[in-house]
Length: 166
Image (cartoon, rainbow, N blue to C red):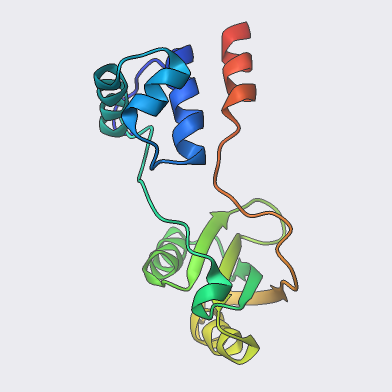
């Protein structure tokens, strides 16, 4: 986040609504939360400025554009050298086929979500991103055969309840 701000119940309501559909007009959002369109615009602007809302994007159906294979890749580096980790993270951030990358604790160092056209492309990506890196000790690729649920929506109703109780 850019700068910390205090969120109130109306902020949580707006965030929940725009996570579901960011294309909704300001007057519709305002009707749902009891604010004028200009008040909604000011609040959303404040949430963008503070970094609470990171981006407004279109979610593309991968299979509609030929990205038919999603794979989870587990990666362990050879050691805990900070430079090795920094280099690995930079490479993951710059690779468009890497949809998500998480540093984790345990026997693996990272979980990566890769998208590819098919298993052959996935193999080539894995070889280039992980196999050719001398700092990668091992990696395991788990191709997905179906998407049960995919999303980025943060469950704000439970977050708001927890914060309210504090």
